[in-house]
Length: 226
Image 1 (cartoon, rainbow, N blue to C red):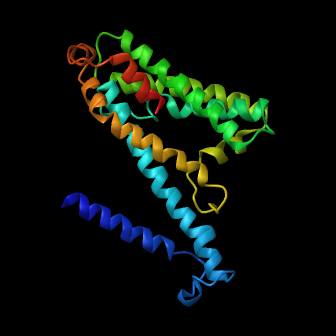
Image 2: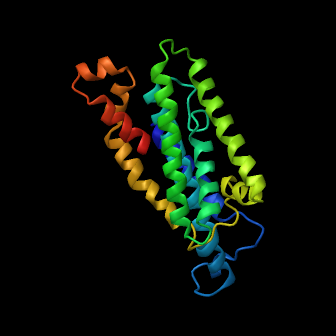
Image 3: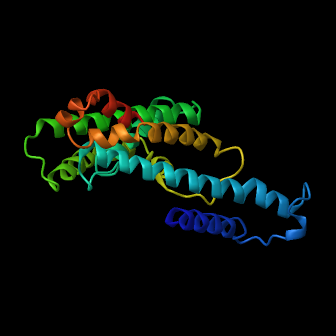
């Protein structure tokens, strides 16, 4: 019942989002091809709403997987070096591949994000005392180092504004034709649901997972890549 209420509430808010904005929409013209109201709804507001929902559930699943794998409720992509690693990847893409497509640049950012996350987990595994506050602090230290390196070279290359434009969560400019890449989130989330039980078991520790027949390292790697 609770899930049904939450789902209904999200749908209700989504409908409000579609019909909310500076421009006035005439309900009688929404389904008339070529009218201003039709263009506003189908070229701007529906893509904007889909983008917000897709990004939202994708990011929430990311945070949950990170917390399960590290056995720490304070860990997330922003406190594990993932976000700042991707920022470094964006810098590399802008410096060396400025004319490449957005997909190619995002691929580089994703590779760097995974590399930073693996670095974080590798350091955490070496620490014998895994205090709840210590683990995210390590991630924040890694993030600080990566962020300072990124901003130094971005300043040298006059790319600070370009990098920041990639990192702002702004959906106001979303239009049909430049949001469809977010659809890749949907199959990744479905795969995450498929492995949800394995992630939960792995979150109880390596020895516990191995005793239950789980290939711990493989499941952790799958979780990080997702």
